Length: 315
Image (cartoon, rainbow, N blue to C red; front, side, top):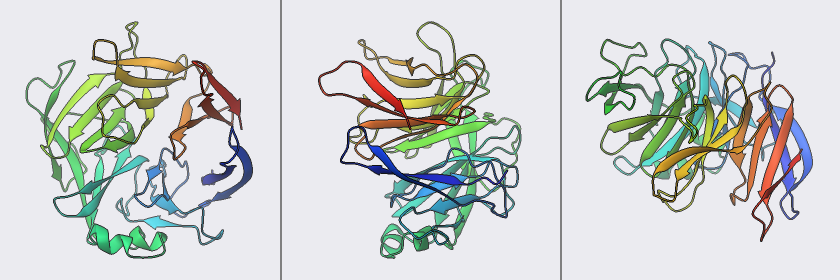
């Protein structure tokens, strides 16, 4: 009920990376608990979203002293929500960072966009990282998607815009219970667990497409948090998914098969009684981390050089 963020410190010179410290922060905040997906900032701090109905988003800098290492972020409005995960996009059109937050609700769930008044250069010039976003002023708007054809299609697509209202309207493409989100290049990816669907927004053309999370065997999974391997902006990069659904709770990925077609596949099988969460990667992308939520376990996954099978260990 107290919420909060756990901070793990690793010895990056060891293989695997040994844990050398742990502490908690951002606990017992005034706006909620149930800290969920979250996401990185452009300067390497962590955004943690509160999925409590009255929640906020807080920014955490593990390099600051305890007690001064977090602050409330203005990227969501003060009235709160069931906030889930966060991402950002450096827009070249206005030289500003655009911040995005999903909302895991069945109504008033629109994805929130926050554009700060400060441009990128002004934000990055501030030496203390928590001063760049916390306390910033800016504009909130909300994602409205319309279909170019029948919205009930198995693969709807269309155009999107940004509105001042969080309430849905007739003719909208619905996307309730939105969870994980990430941005790669000029494309924004987010998922909805109830629909079992991946949405892809082209932030330059204001168009969107979607697909169901159907695996090669024909079954679907309920996507939760997502994380895209960063680096070159290649269509061959993998998009990874944690899972929140009935049956197994695994780690999945979306990538190209030998024919160049995008497919979903399972890469790690989890427990059948708890969702996988906390999906992230080390800065060099050589280590994967995720949690089995109800089991209170965090796992570190890596591949040894020359091997075709991965290793893992609980932390």
